Image (cartoon, rainbow, N blue to C red; front, side):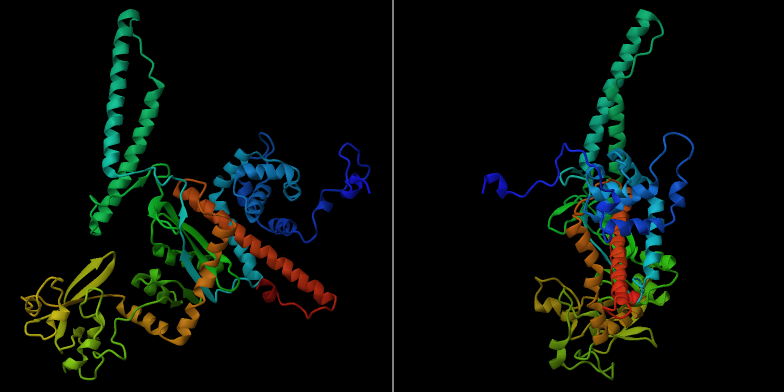
Length: 546
């Protein structure tokens, strides 16, 4: 056997003319996901997109339905670069089929991606409506969570307030120097040729733009510094660092460790099939302010509110818990109770009777070593607390913090109390004799307007049913992030600015929803074919969606 006979035969001779050439459509299998995507796109309303095109003027544009389909399919194929999408439209059979042979350049693709922000939200809602019709969205339980994604900004390109002020002064000095040179040149030109105006150097425009950016960054830095100062942070030792490439991003802890300019994208996910009901991005560490707005947007989109809401302890604020109850949504969020537990000696029948000394070691302590708030029993009828020694703490003051009303309960006197050493904080280096003296100080307890809501949540989470329900949270809430970051590779945003980043995140979540939708359609058709061929019983559309 000769050497050339060993290798597989070449099926096509490049230079030979093809008599019966195959059609482009025949190159795409019937069950290929690009066909299902194309069918779904045909069933959507594109009137809002088409309204942006004047019609009848200029070169005929590519329909927005086709460009949106190209982007969605590209992201389903783990492609996020407009240049790579352009290459795929000219070389990949599935992209050529989807684009009808058109090859849009990367600048057209990039501008289209960022232009239709409002329309992308509408498309997101349309896809969710289809999922509800198919039974993929039930709203029986939803989960909310956020993650961290790096901004398009180097971790080393950040400046503090003192540095910004120093650089701004240097730019002002340089601008003043150039303007002086221009004035001298104008005077010299006027002497030689009469009224002549010197031409402004191009570097002056660059310096002016740089000064504007430094002033904007300095304004952001001062505002953030003031916020940190009011929170008790020493801004001299720990000043705010403002990212200079993307001013909307914020320096936050990375999921992988360390700090860098980041954004916090959020998802509200349905528990039936992991369909994303709401997607948004915030430029702060805590995503909990976006919780209730996400629920409201999903309720408006689906025309009904969820039954159960799952979230981690970061969303256990009184405002969120009260908001869930007002919306008649049952929440499952980890919450510590401030009421005395079963094993707590403070849980006694006669509150006026002091707790025996041999039970003092069983009284719970807070991280500062004091008697915990759960050692004090709240009496609703008289609106007062009772301490372990039977003394009352009366409601003496009221204040508002961030639109929440707080009440301060204080003991009349702690002098002579045998638990004063455990109840009042006197520092770590004081002697027992010093700690035994109250010196006029009294113990105080704070209680806000949402305390009863917290206790109801704590009692619900203490039950086996509550714990079982909450255990479903991680599988529902974190799976979309695992796919978008681990599979799609979304570790860093490609766009800059909060609005553009929010738009990029919504496109990405829409591609995940579309992938789930067409897979459910494919599965349902397979079950229908098997039922018609007698291979299985009639399929239920809910089974296909799952």
